[in-house]
Amino acid sequence: MAAITLKDIVKTYDDGFTAVKGVSLDIADGEFMILVGPSGCGKSTLLRMIVGLEDITAGDLEIDGKRVNDVPPRDRNLSMVFQNYALYPHLTVGENIAFPLRLKKSELNDDEINRRVKEAAEMLELNDHLDRKPANLSGGQRQRVAMGRAIVRHADAFLFDEPLSNLDAKLRGQMRTQIAQLQRRLGTTSIYVTHDQTEAMTLGDRVAVLKKGLLQQCASPRELYEQPVNIFVAGFIGSPSMNFVPARVDNGKLQTPIGELTVPDRVLKAAQQKEMVILGLRPDFFEDEEFVDEKVREHGTVFTATPTHVEWLGNEQYAYITYEHDPKLKPVLDELAHDLDQDEIPATLVLATNSASRVRGGQEGKFWLDTRLLHVFDPDTGDNLTRDPEAGQKLTEEAAEERQREIDRANSEKTEA
Image 1: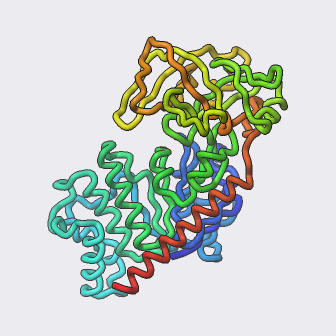
Image 2 (image 1 turned 135 degrees about the vertical axis):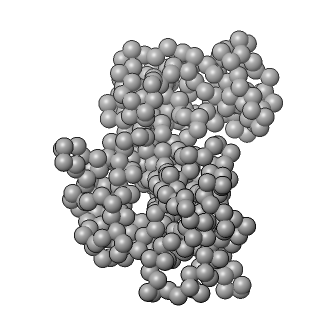
Image 3 (image 1 turned 90 degrees about the horizontal axis):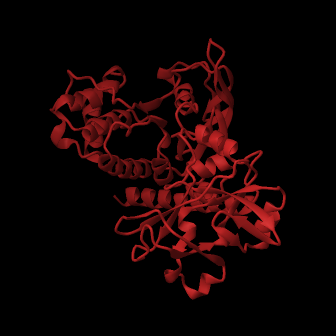
């Protein structure tokens, strides 16, 4: 295992385009770090620089304190799992897994190679497929073979480049679980590139969010969700996405497209800094008024609205309410949509409600909004004016402590075994 440090890493291509702009990250020994962002944000380029497939224009890359900018990829002892599996079609599963070890035949004898292949196959449930060719395997099985090839090397770190993007949704979910369990069992430093924020939120100890080659925020998934540093991170993290609506302060309350909101003093103070602000409202900040506990009702505002339609998903339900964009903020939201790789930020609020709610499309309903949770964004800079850095740091520290307990349990189980 190894700690990996990036110090002001820059990548500029021969045509003058700078794909990565001074990214700095400290990846701890045994940590699962996710690099996430929309297409073209520089995440894959950054990964390729770490493994040595791309030259570093400026900055320093260190593995366990040693600068490796000029060290060839084969000497960095890193294993990479590619998006397209990169399997050899003429070799069996067992031969594919063993391939990187065969390159080191002078260092390892056949017994050791076979032992490592068998060990990896057991971890990945590939024992019954060792004599098959890749063409006869499913997409998920091929990906497991690619992971097995990485495992047998006993590398200092695993690097994953969007490994699940070729799989269907159900298989992606299964593979996510396997990758998470495997990483925790092995405790190997891992860096995982994805554009899928669901993968980022479910897999990573910490997540680094990139935008146009710049690091926006690096924190635990929960900190990113609850304490985003800016409107880009808030819009990228979370599914369904955060709602963004215009708001103005008037007579000590916020005037919004869904009505007048009574908000806590800290929210009001943040909103007073600008003539107009953008409110960030996650779908789960809402509820059908009928299902709000009396103990929390006073911490929010009840409003009336008519959903255009409602989606019932069994365990949850979403109501959609349209409104009109403020012309002054439309250019800001259009730019945000472009950054998020979307066509537009629709003038539609998405509200999560209890699955038992009887509110239906075209019918007026009463909804409750928890105003304690509101985010206020500066429309000029995109900064989150209500972010609490100390609360955010505490969330990431708690995640790190939980992770350490998992590592300790895994090590204890290995010892007992």
